[in-house]
Image (cartoon, rainbow, N blue to C red; front, side, top):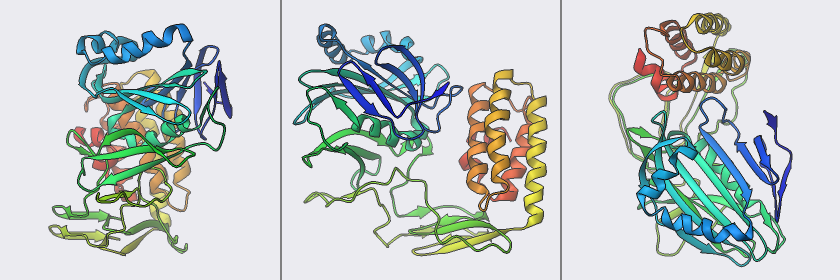
Length: 402
């Protein structure tokens, strides 16, 4: 594995890599296989490729995109992508811009590990060059990866295209379509090119919540946030509370005016101060509910020391667990160091959540069963309890084994 250079180049194109991209393979000149920030080689929740398309193969490639309308053709291409079955196929789109044209085919499928995935194939052509860009995302985690992946596409420079500033990518919310988030590209001439639409709900999992109304049962916990502009933080005793905490959302996006006659708005989904909250009994510490509400929770030094002890216990349980050695190596070298570092951080929750998510995904990826990873589950659950992390939200597979 190597960290990607700032620029990638190939016949007829160049592109600036967004921060954090890793170039995994470079099988021939101009063909790159990359992991966006946060992806890894074990579970591969997101991957992106780019390759030049020679003039003699462009027509055949475009015809193949057309033929994907036939599920049998799509099925024939599944093994090349590590997929097992096709769930749905979107119509072929052709978006013409001043200096290039993008042909896009999207479809949803199940991976060989039965994980829902979105595959986006884009053929981008100018008067003198053509490239194929492929993006594959775990649909349950698309909010983590779609921004950088599309930004790479926006930074693509083609021979024969108009030089200028990189294009911008932004998310658009249509209140009449709370089931999806749309992404589009703003071109140098201020025209807009639709790129993709991604679901807010995948199966029974809410990936991104647009609705202002929140309905829940009884609420118990630490550092819980409900409502517009609500803030919750976890601080060490005696330390100043941070002024602001961010929420998990699509990447920051430039403002724009709403389209006339449509209930659409830019990425900031907190402009409407009206929100309805229907909950059961509420009990806990540091719970914020409502417009402008905020809450801060103190973690004592004793609790911090307890976290460190539990993380060491988790390390021992991972080493003893009956799981593949490759999985152990990834967990011990990736998830644990991040959790250990976060235990000394001002706000330990974010690092602990990422570590628990990584453990969750890897154990799910190897098909772990409760009888084999009981020690890991016990230590992880205790860590989540001390830190006020919702284990069912960040590690649903682990929670299902409890």
